[in-house]
Length: 486
Ligand SMILES: *Cc1c(COP(=O)(O)O)cnc(C)c1O
Picture (cartoon, rainbow, N blue to C red):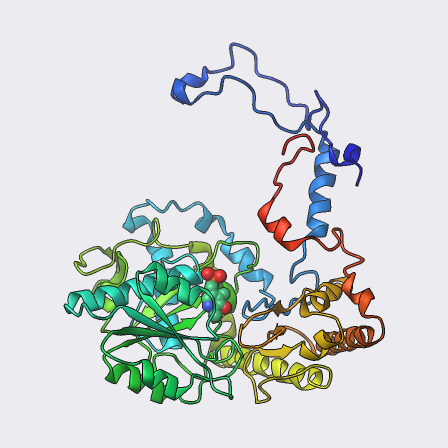
């Protein structure tokens, strides 16, 4: 694009003609703002006409990829379609105009929403207590592991300085354990893509505080030995953390609480109807059992015997607050609307359909790609692009070529245990026609890889920005609106 068109600002151009206030009508700004906060000069902002402004934002919106535009099989992220009615409900002025500092007697309705949602999420996860505060999955992990840390401190058990994490774990798990001051010990997976019991046994001793697991794990495989793992960890005096970022495979079917976990987080922005991918806001609520309940962040939402909701701050063992106020309320409204709209049977159906879609795609695609773990998967599965790599095309190039077909690339090079990994999560909201279309596209790309690999290596061809140097693009970000500033 030429510099001339990129730079839209022209001196003196304005968006709208609003009559200026007269001197008499103007209140001195210092009436409502301290002098020290006032600017001395006007800010440097683009000067554009209203039409140019609208065109600029419309163009950006068109370039933006989202689930509303096309298929988005980004494994581990659960990029499902979220019903628009939930958006509408969460934007109701009665919610959006409610200030978080409003007194309890004026916030009973909002508190009731949070309370009822909490009850449902406890039931869905199989736990006794909940906090809605954390704003993301990683934030939920931090909350849960700090609670585990405090649990051992309180018991005077000072030796427990290790957290076990399988080699398939999401990167946030070891990062969280490290942030909380624990030593991270990696557990090997076996040839079924599950935690290797011998590797677990050899690492269990009285220095282990916890194990962090996601089940199904990031290979999309259900840990068959989960009850054995739980009893081994508990017998060694450790606790079990469940990474429930994606509950899409097991909702209404299996519960982390019943699998023997002590604490878990759930990403409302993955499973429970909040659009995501744009960086938030999210909700990584944390559920736990009686053992860890005293350590939950404050305040805890309770209902007194007259049916009135109140915030309980009287909690001496709490890890404290993890977020201002009570969490991202809009997510709670969406999640409750989603749970109510689906009902008990509907939520189960969501999981059945998510698992069906993943297995359908897996079985179609294994004709064209290596499938390192060929067993029934849960809501996602992981292919390997090893065969294509031997033909001179890496998984990265394959992902780039997919963009030319208007499809978002799957998650690639994760989990780390699969070379040239392609991690696909179709979700329950895609139709059979969309899935078949994706299979056709993948098939066509594998044919291109065999016949003209250099062509695939040059992809993408149809996107607004062609292939970028990924390292440079991440290190030397240019976030300037103007072509002259850098
Ligand atoms: C997405 C995800 C997380 C992190 O959640 P954020 O909300 O992005 O912080 C953690 N674990 C797993 C398995 C995930 O898929």
